[in-house]
Image 1 (cartoon, rainbow, N blue to C red):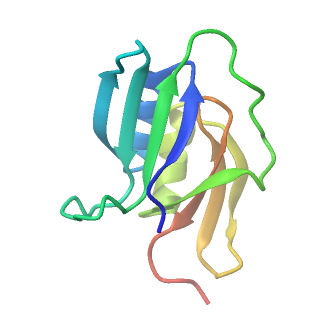
Image 2 (cartoon, helix red, strand yellow; image 1 turned 90 degrees about the horizontal axis):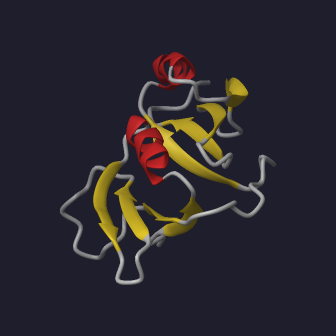
Length: 132
């Protein structure tokens, strides 16, 4: 079971806004004892889980240039979203780069790839039933 995925970012506010548009809920947004900003987003709707699971993204804001972002589709975060067909125009209007437009996934779900503010590939999969 996935506990969390952790990344560094140069702009924590932009990253939080991006993932909140995709349905994430900020659980933590604080400054660590070392002086770094840290945020944790919950990606599922089950806030009552006792095991700490449910998919979380953790970001640490760092100063200076980030390590090279990987724009290749194989390195990505995959998220289920509701009504992907309606969400894509909203993301485009907000300036989000769509790197792979709407297409059926191998499982038959609607799928698209977008870039987060740090250039990471984010696969968006329709959370509803598959199309046949």
